[in-house]
Image (tube, rainbow, N blue to C red):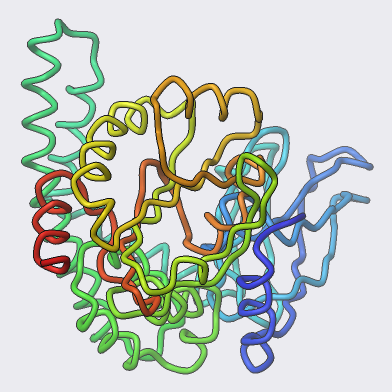
Length: 363
C-alpha cells in the first residue's frame, strides 16, 4: 500500500517505544472450517485500511499476532461486517457465539472496555439523542423548503452537540489520566478546540497515549498543520510533467488549494478563487492547486473549462495523492495559506476571511 513517505517515516520511526504485539484469539464455534476473516488498522494518518491481517478459522478458532500500540483502533471484518476493537499488547479474545460480529464479546483489552464505557455514557447524554433525531428528520424525504428548514435546525443543534462533546471528552481525559484512549478522545475534538488547548491537553497525555497512532497524529498536526507549523515539503508534477516543489514558492504567500474535477463544491468555489487571484496576483501572492483526480483528461478539462490560470499539480492517485496525505486532507475543497518562510498561516480560509487576511498581510 502506497502512501506519503514522510508520514510513513514519522509513523514508523516514532513507534519504537510505543508498539508491541497483541495475541488476538478469535473463538467462533459456529464458523465453518476455512472461513476467512481480516483484521485491519484504522490509522488516522491514512484514509483506508492499513496493516491488514488475514485469518482463517480452523476448528472454531484462529490466533494471530498483531503489532499495535496501546489503544490503537482496529476492525475485524467478516462477510461484509465490520466490528471495531481497541487493542493493546497482551492477549485479547473475541468470542463470536453465532455468525454476527454484532454479538461478539471482547475480553483482555482495557482500552476497548474504556471506549465502550465512553460510548455508553455519551449516548446517555440528552444532546446525543436530540442531535440524532434532528439529523434523521433532516434526512427524511421532504420538500425542498422543509429540507432547508430541517437542515437549519440540525445545524443549530449540532453546534451545541460539538460544544458538549468537547467538554465531555476533556472532562473524561482529565478524570482518567492513565487511559491510553485519551489520545483518541482528544483527536476527535481537534477541529473544535484552539491549538493551545490541544497542545496543553496533549502534554498531559501519558507516554503510551502519546505514542499510539492517535497520539502521533496529534503531534504531527500540532507541529506541521496548525498555524505557525512548518508546512510539509513536497514535490509533484504539473500538467506538463515539470516537477514542482513547495520551496519553489519560498518568498511568496501561497494558497495551497486541494480540489478535484468531480468535486461540485470545489468547482463552485473556483470563480471566487479566480477573483482572489486577480486581485492579489501582483502582490507577492500565488495559488498552487493540488488535484485529487485519478483521470488526467478530467483534470485537464476542468482546469480549461474553469479557466484556472495558476499552477496545477497531481499524481493522479485520487485520495492517495501524496501531497494530500502529508496535509491529512479528509475532504475537498480544503486549503492552507502559507507564509513566505513556509509557515502555516491559516487552514480552510475562504471568501471574505481570505480576502481580509490577504489585504492585511500584503499591504
